[in-house]
Amino acid sequence: MTLLLCRYLNSSVAMSFNINLVDRPNKKDNLLILATTNHLNPVFPYLNENERAYLEQAATSDIQYVFFPKKTNSLLVHFIDTSDDAHYQKELVRVAGNVITNAFTHYKIQEISLVNTVKKIEIAEYVEGIVLGGYQFTKYFSDSNGNHKVPHQINIAAQDLSAKELNGLQAVLEATYKARDLVNEPQSYLTATKLGEEIETLGNTYGFSVKVLDKPQIEALNMGGLLAVNRGSFGPPRFCIMEWKPENAKNEKPIVLVGKGVVFDTGGVNLKPTPNSLATMKCDMAGAATVIGAMVAASKANLPIHLIALVPATDNRIGNDAYLPGDVITMYDGTTVEVLNTDAEGRLILADALHYAKQYQPELVLDFATLTGAAVRSLGQHAICYMGTAGATVKEQLEESGQKVFERLVEFPLWREYGKQLKSNIADLKNVGGPMAGMITAGKFLEHFTNYPWLHFDIAGPAYLQAPDAYRSKSGTGVGVRLVFDFLKNY
Ligand code: BES
Ligand code: ZN
Ligand code: ZN
Image (tube, rainbow, N blue to C red; front, side, top):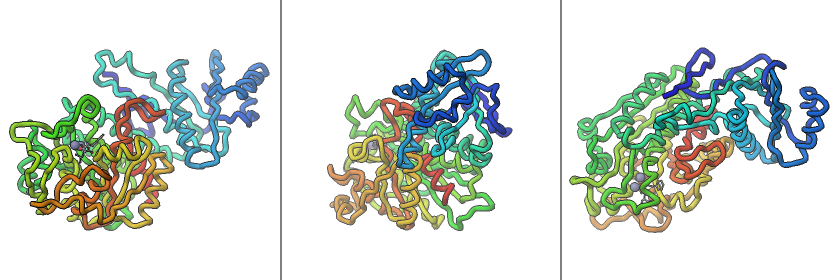
């Protein structure tokens, strides 16, 4: 396997991009100039007369970038689309960054210095598009060299990005790569046990503390939801606890993140209908990947926030001892649940984690889960369904972060009427709420296990893509990592 080790301010990260701050781009560098088609003047000093004429011509067509190959220092001029909407503008810049990633490989450009001539755009978003668009999961190719894009060195002028901003950018990009890797790992590698080990390794690397509970410990706690889902599995469950507690933490009580860690969801005895749904169900730990990514980003960027992350992990399988429709189980908090569909397993393991979170008296709990098909049907891949009991300010801040990083949020109501759909004849609750508004009844189920300000994010739509969407790679997207990081950065 080829691992590209890149340097950044004395740290090493496995990424095929090395981002450096320089005083100013050197004329002898390969230059990548960001421009708009209606304002070419700032580009002209870099060009001779023929090239200027060519560029002017190109600016009237719909060409996205122009490449001027030279012996020593080549030049790329990239026309950036503009928008009056500040959030769309940021996204257009990321999408542009993704376009240029492929040009690097095509023209075999290995090192480039960025020059920004467009006042209303920021280099950070362009680099985000380049790096996220350049993501590849090559681990399982027998000839991984042949499948790697070329490594690149990107130099940014110090006036365009501070060292602190670069540090934050590097942290969140690396964390998004990590989250994508975890989602893209098949269950043949990433069992619940392995997920626990991966979390321990990340804790050692990035400096957050990790405790992984094994099956006897989970049994001793009576985590009935997690244990019921695990019954059809060959391997044991895990309950993973991560903590980042810097001395300068701004919050007195922790923020707790919870992520659904179903490493594969067959649906259990209520087997998922093939062919469309089963093939992608290694993605069912994407919520776990989000919160693990958030821990990586927060610790690498040294955010002054006390954070805890909880990941209940298991697969959901058919097996001799698998739990059955009609079974009544007793959850960690004592609630009895009539299981009417074994495919509604995510809420069972999350409920135990949400109850576990109460001991911290948290300031805020955010849970992330690929929880329902209803969320996919309602918003598709372009938004996250969210709902919960946290206050208006927190919701506004998260929605603003969502717009900024373009992981947009749409709120759904948790009206009590939806809760009535979860009434059971023989137990406190049933685990399905009928065919209507499934993302909300799932949310109502979770709400039962909370007693603190809480928000639930159903990421089933944007977590895993059938085809790339610009810099959002095919398969695991790492959705939520940039959202949580931006929210925490401004908290
Ligand atoms: N993991 C699925 C939800 C899912 C669907 C994730 C599509 C990613 C893409 C979840 O465990 C599930 O099966 N939910 C059921 C619940 C139903 C039985 C109440 C669903 O939404 O169909
Ligand atoms: Zn399921
Ligand atoms: Zn599931």
